[in-house]
Image 1 (tube, helix red, strand yellow):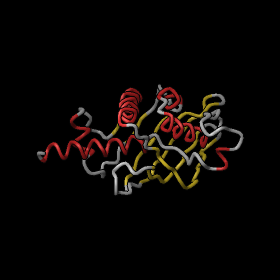
Image 2 (spheres, rainbow, N blue to C red; image 1 turned 45 degrees about the vertical axis):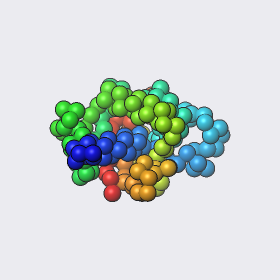
Image 3 (cartoon, rainbow, N blue to C red; image 1 turned 120 degrees about the vertical axis):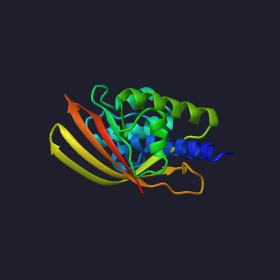
Image 4 (cartoon, helix red, strand yellow; image 1 turned 90 degrees about the vertical axis):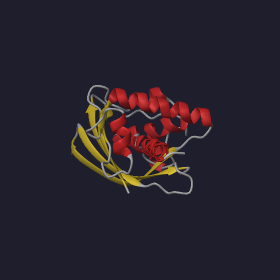
Amino acid sequence: MSTNETIDKSAGLILLMLLIIAQGCTNPWSPFMASGSGQDDPLFPDHPDKVLFNLTLSYRLLDIELYLSCLDSENFIFYFDPQDEGISTYLNNLGIYNYQWEYQEEKNSTEAIFESMKEIGEVVVPVFFGSEIYYVDSNYAILVRDYSFDPPVIHGELVRGRAIFYMTKYEQIWKITEWRDMVE
């Protein structure tokens, strides 16, 4: 295997991890999130934590529609961590030079990730911990969560980081408008 093929495969795994992270979610087994709901039932997104629960659930169920329902389709932006090894090469190969993409790229990449997980018969779920919530006002929130994966995305390596979610409330429903990924 050539060095470029190794870099491309590493960048692909890193992107998979980032996208899973980007789909940032709270711990689905949290007592707060589980109360009044079955383990596989989405929650009405009337609180930012419930949006993150639904994101995690979308990964467990490989449900792209549930995943997309958590994002603001008009204003969504995902920011990659420029310090993440290999991500620059991967993004540059896609014609992306500013370490960010919008809703359509997120949709396409998440659909590909879900299809890939279906093909290999393994589901990787982000596990978010910590409960820092910073409300700016009643219609805007910033949530910061540390994360890892279950099972680990790269076998034998614990991947951890921090995701920052910016959410906006539209009537009674919260949507993610932006998230930033910081890989440890």
